[in-house]
Length: 67
Image (cartoon, rainbow, N blue to C red; front, side):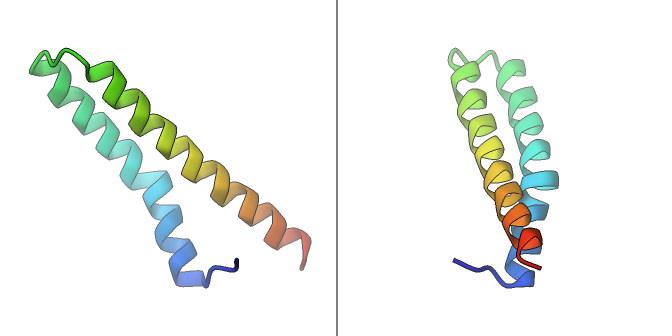
């Protein structure tokens, strides 16, 4: 599956800027409210961020190798 440049740029921004900021925000809120399972929520969110970053990294490598 090939992504056009605008979709790739949005996904890259989400993976590099938005998700880390969101995860930090949620972590601060959950820990300040002393939510019992905050670690589980943050682990799932971080796993998704790493997954998205990895997929985009692999896509970038494949795209650059075909040029």
